[in-house]
Length: 331
Image (tube, rainbow, N blue to C red; front, side):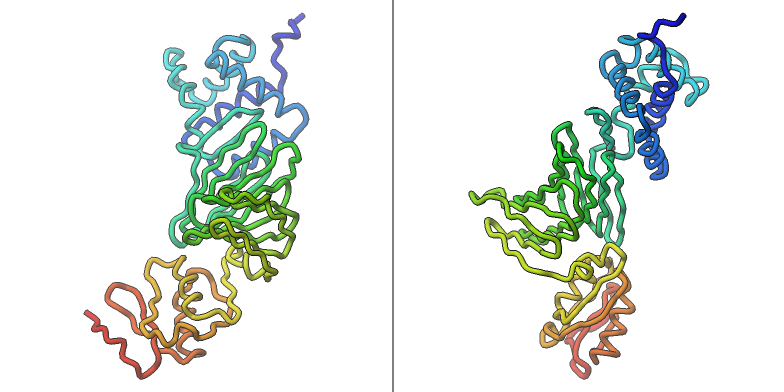
């Protein structure tokens, strides 16, 4: 009869296979989703934790021979022809090669620098190991750091929409410069703009704090937006759908000054829109535009607002009043 202390259950064999599978240098989003689904089944999270403990304490070889054998078997199946002499090379890369940040049972799996980013005009959805997710807007960057006590995200630049899984014992904290946003289970948007930070709450409740200020955190309710500048926090009611429309690929403008609308459009463009005539900066803009669709915005500026659009040699386009020469010569 097999010794129950060393017998490897089916879940542990599957966990060993997942440990190796997640150690590849390129992982598709679907693979991560499948891992989350597998881990949610009864017993699987504990099985993976035991496999990871064997790897952490014995470099995959020693403290529990049965589990180590399962790891080695999974390794051989995923890397046919890999010699035993190269085992340490393979396992040595597992903890750092994973393409997304995963935290399982207190252990860390990181991308190369546990950082996720988007380029200008790009958006990206990042699933997290706790069941939360975040959507990165154009030209944005975040750093993910989870522990047993806290789920921490550093918004290095740009904007992100967070959909947080409830976990009362492990708060979800977003740091954006000197601003700290704390949630348990909620949906909220954070944007860094210059030295300021703007936080919009879609649902649930969050605490917003200016880290350098002596005052306690400010509780924000759904439908409110907090603007943090230095030690000051100002709140106001907003149209949440319009404020977070970027997450659906749209930008909603309601009586927005042209200068502000152009700045928003330019966040998604490599070839920018320029305002060549200061007199039109305050012209009101109304409409719904697809993020990055410069042609549609310029056409609306010409047809609806009666402005003149001039293509430029560097690929940008200038806006001015019709009949007004911007004073620039095109090469």
